Image 1 (spheres, rainbow, N blue to C red):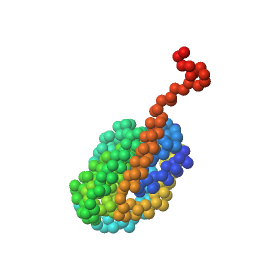
Image 2 (cartoon, rainbow, N blue to C red):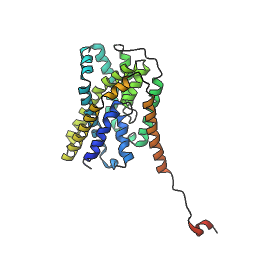
Image 3 (cartoon, rainbow, N blue to C red):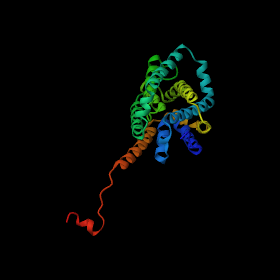
Image 4 (spheres, helix red, strand yellow):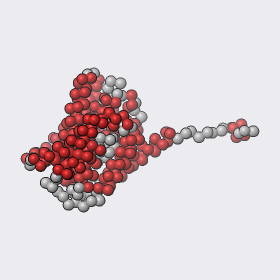
Length: 283
């Protein structure tokens, strides 16, 4: 299959926006929605699926740049050597792990079962970290915090863990307030998204694209951009002084649904004997 049907590209793009802004793992939804809906997703080239996912992230990032331009402008006005070090340390671990282990991660951790386990792991991290006190705020981030966030972003390369969720958990574990943890999570995401987009875009150009593939990517990016821009208020929902447990509960529920369906598919069909002859068994 050389492309993704436009209606499905639109559907996944619409899912991307809310899932990107909430700590529920957009990558998990891009994996699980087609699987739960019974699409022939596995017939699509894995590299194309990953490129499409990165394209959805790109559309969401562009929408965030527009929707959060005032916050970003304020951060840029305060940009200095300390913030540059923080950003670099938050970027390097994920960049190194992603570049060196991208193929094994996609090959071994891309299925529904591994994604469900990733959802559970991320939920556990959020629940534990959110119990920490909120003692740190704007301007308190150090190089150690940057490294902690970088390790968290590297862990988020496993589908289901959620970059947003695990970096929120890392920032909360470092005792940042919820609003500052959310700001840190969004700020350090942009370099990773730009880097992944550049890498996948270069590979696509080398392989060549078809009109159908370009149409799929364009439709997906447009839908992701629109849904993210329309969902900006969700950022305020997470930033408010509210616990992370509702998002963790949603992740656990989604993982349980996937694991239950997998278990039912693997369960053997019970032997049935119908009619009088069957009831006599070994007579």
